[in-house]
Image (cartoon, rainbow, N blue to C red):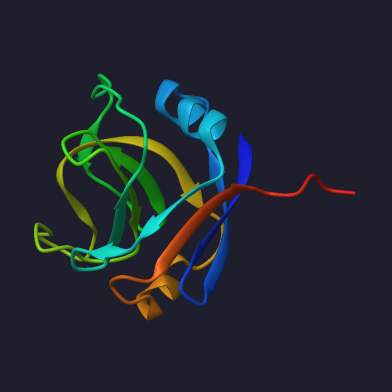
Amino acid sequence: MRAITITAGGVSLAAELNDGPSARRIWEALPMEGQANLWGEEIYFRIPLEMACEPEARVEVDIGELGYWEPGRAFCIFFGRTPASTGAAPRAAGPVNIVGRVIGDATRFRGVRAGEKVVLRAAPAPG
């Protein structure tokens, strides 16, 4: 796992990227920034990478999971219900490559407003 920091508006949380191909490409492209778009309790923003949908891509996601949505070339942060949800869990607009997860309480992202700056950066090495 690769440690990153996600800062959106006034919220900053640690996260981990997994070892999948999309996560590796995101890691190699850090730092990245964009403007928050909101879709229910999901933040997404366009990133400068174009990646294919992976075989394990899915629409059913958990709170705190991070994804890459191919049609929008977007990094997604799921922290609650979305307009596509059928229960309490988030549901993506379409299949997303799961690239990692937030460490801690992802629902803190509820305080982020559309248009606020979002920054992804590698976390400082411990020690």
